[in-house]
Length: 57
Image 1: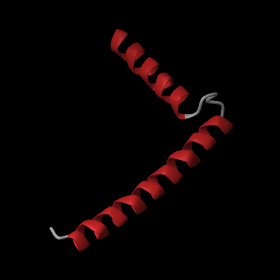
Image 2: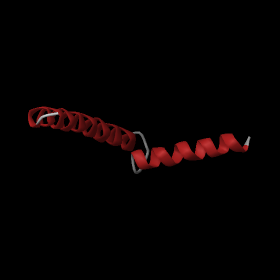
Image 3: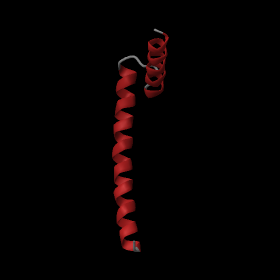
């Protein structure tokens, strides 16, 4: 790969990263609004707890 291709690839990855960060931020805010106190972190803990309970059954 030459330098120009690397530059294009980096630009594409930066754009994708920006899009993903925006979606992550939106999801985090939405989760906080619906009651997950710490947003995504709280959702992850709730999901882990549900899986643990499922394993116990």
